[in-house]
Amino acid sequence: MPVLPDAQTVTSVRHYSDRLFSFRVTRPQSLRFRSGEFVMIGLMGENGKPLLRAYSIASPAWDEELEFYSIKVQDGPLTSKLQHVQPGDQIILRPKPVGTLVHDALLPGKRLWLFSTGTGFAPFASLLRDPETFEKFDEIIVTHTCRDVDELTYSRELVESIKSDEMLEELLGVEALGKLRYYPTTTREQSGTMGRITTRIEDGSLFSDLGVPALNPEEDRAMVCGSLAFNLDIKALLEQAGLREGANSDPAEFVVEKAFVG
Image 1 (cartoon, helix red, strand yellow):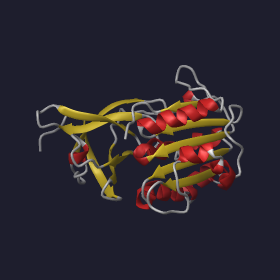
Image 2 (cartoon, rainbow, N blue to C red; image 1 turned 45 degrees about the vertical axis):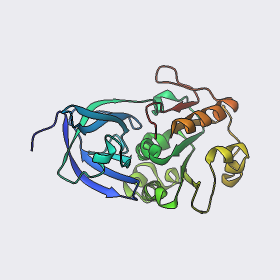
Image 3 (cartoon, rainbow, N blue to C red; image 1 turned 135 degrees about the horizontal axis):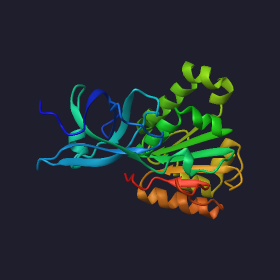
Image 4 (tube, rainbow, N blue to C red; image 1 turned 90 degrees about the vertical axis):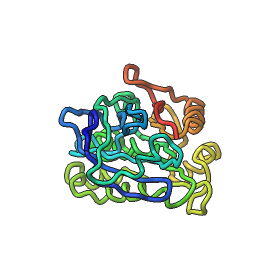
């Protein structure tokens, strides 16, 4: 097998549905990243040139491997091929992490909201396994909106694993892990909580369900990752509540992942 440029080896793959899968790869020794950042990964295209896309790293900064969570697009230039990778296969991974969904871009606050749709949950899978997240906030609420119940499997299992993680419990204490709250919703298949998260913010049901006050810039901080339309809608609601968008160089009350679309 010819060695790809910046090659890393796939170590495991798991398919959640006909639309979603996750996989883990070896981590370059030189790669240092902040939880929540993304890298460019891909395969060689038919023209012999690398075909790369931005993928959030779903594993925390301390993990010895790198995890990614991906959608399957049957006619997608990259994901139509990427969905067929098996352990032992190689992918291209450019070890230059960047991104806005990092703690450095937020001012200190009381409550951290992580708003996601679909595979936009991936950077939060990294942040939720980072001890710094629990040390910085009194409450962490992650929302995940998908069309169908099976599309919530990845986030549900990850949150459950965090709450029973003995290493994090020993490091942070049982009370710290109790800060994490999970709020899944579906938009098509019937589930315990139906509807778009934007609707539930607007009508106040999100806050009444969780027993927390409405968004306010004094207490709340937020990170947003989903489709372009979702990102814009949530951004508008956050700004309406008085929160300002931040950046690595200018921390504020919320940040949006601009590189992620889908």
